[in-house]
Every structure is written in C-alpha cells, then in structure tokens.
Length: 343
Image 1 (cartoon, helix red, strand yellow):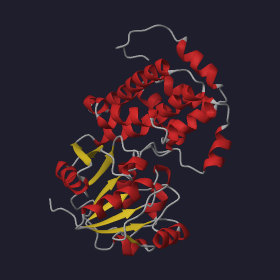
Image 2: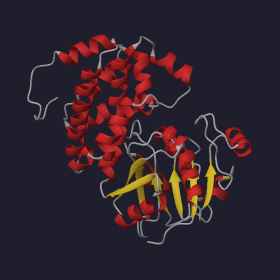
Image 3: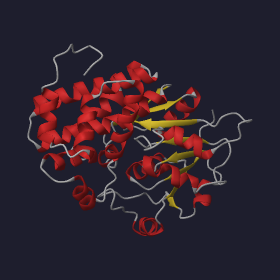
C-alpha cells in the first residue's frame, strides 16, 4: 500500500493537535487540520496555540483549514479526531466531501450512546460507501498516549489496528518516529473496546483517589477492571491477547495513574464529593467515560457478562449512589475465584 503524503486531520482536539505536530516534525507531509468551531480554529491559525493543550505550539507547516471540503480534497489518509459522541454529527456534515477509497483512521475512544457502536463502525455507517465497490480501509490508533506528554515528544507507544492488515501497516509507517513506536493489530474490535471501557475503570480509579483509598485498592481495581474488559471482549469475539497488551493493560494503567487523565480526574472529583454536573460545568471537558458507561452496561446485559465495577460506576454517575457505598458493595460481594467468569 502506497504511503500517504497528503493527510487531513479532522478535529482539533488534543490527539489531532499532537498527531499533526508529529507529522510536521517528520517532514514530507502535506498536513491539513480542520475543526468544527470556526472561532477556535481561527485562533489556532493565528496564535498556533490551543487552550486544549497548554504549552503546545502547532508547527507552521500544518495548514489550519476552516473549510472541510478543502481539508479533505486530495487527501490520501484521513484522521478522524472528534470525540466519539460527536463523531456522527461531524461526519454527517462531510456528506459528499470524503474522497472515495481513501483510508480513515480514528483516534476516538468510546462507544456511541444508543447504537453502542465503536468509532470505526460509526464512520463506516456514516460515510456510506458504494456497496458495489471494494470496502474502504478503516482503522484505529489507540494505546497509552497522554497528549500532554506527546506534545513534548516523550517516548510513547500506540497500536494501529484494522481488519485490513496492509492499511494498519501503512498507518504504522506514517506515524512512527524516533519517540513514537507504533505496533499493528488485526483486532480493531478488541483495541477499540479496550480504549472505551478503560475510561469507565479510570473513573472508578479516580473515585478511589478522591477517597484516599490507597494504592492497594487502586491496583486491585486495575486488575479486576482489566478482567471485566477482557470478559466482555471475549464474549464479543475479540482476541484475548489484545487486552493484555498496549491497548488494554498499557492504556488502562496510564489512564488510571496519570494526573492528566480526564476520566480519572473526574472520578477524583466525585470521590471528594463534587457532583457530576458541577464538575462538567466547571471543566468544560469531554469526559468520554461518563457516556461510555451507559453503553457498556447495555452491552454487558446483551452478552450476559458480569461487570461489577462498571455497574458500580454507573450507579454513582446515574443512580445517586454514594461513592463510599459503591466501594462497600464491591468489597462485600460473594467470594469467588480470581480466574472465574464472575467478578
């Protein structure tokens, strides 16, 4: 598969910013960035800075383009960098603009409320390619990648996953640098599921931080949380090894321990007694795990998978359960085997 040289970054959030910068630093790419808010985009074009990523400077080689059609025209690779819950409306606005046959790689982590679709499934549904033609290559980039660290080119790893192995390898070559190591996977289901559900577990980890429950409790939470993710993935047909790799255990650990993690930080606020509504209003942040929790509970019921930590987070977020009571309920569940099918 020919390596792309013209790349459209559709979304000016944290991952869109750092991946644009990465490509500009490598050189040899025509990088165009588009965002949904014209005022924010105009400020980015003028100042090369973004309030979404403190201390970051967008390289001059990245063209900030306010017109989606101009950003997409002639592109050889498209990066879908909108949050999961905004992915459908944003891409519906690209109707007739997405070049035929051009591969799309998503960096969103979450599940769409209502449909419970993964980001790549949403993209394929919205783009609606001609069924009589070969299917467009679509993949995902996911892993332990805190944007604030990537902005400073600190060592990082990520997984390029797609049903089309050659496309995954092409994306791998595109985003590999001296400080970013990219691995490939043919399990986009597992990679996307891990990236979505780990945000739910990160909220629980933050709650423990807010309650000052200690590292013993937090480490146990990560281990049992990963077991929940793997159980659900196995029931859905994902590859079990995916959950013990970078996209699973690696991303989960980073999200739960990093002070930069929005989901963990949200959970910490809840653990300290702040309401969810007050926290969201105060931060104006997109906390993917909050909406993803609803979808994961729905899917777990559908596949008859026991996910007690996820259920506890759902109860705290949407049923008014006190975080302290949620922990008590988890600790007092019936004793079971660590390797059993139940939590």
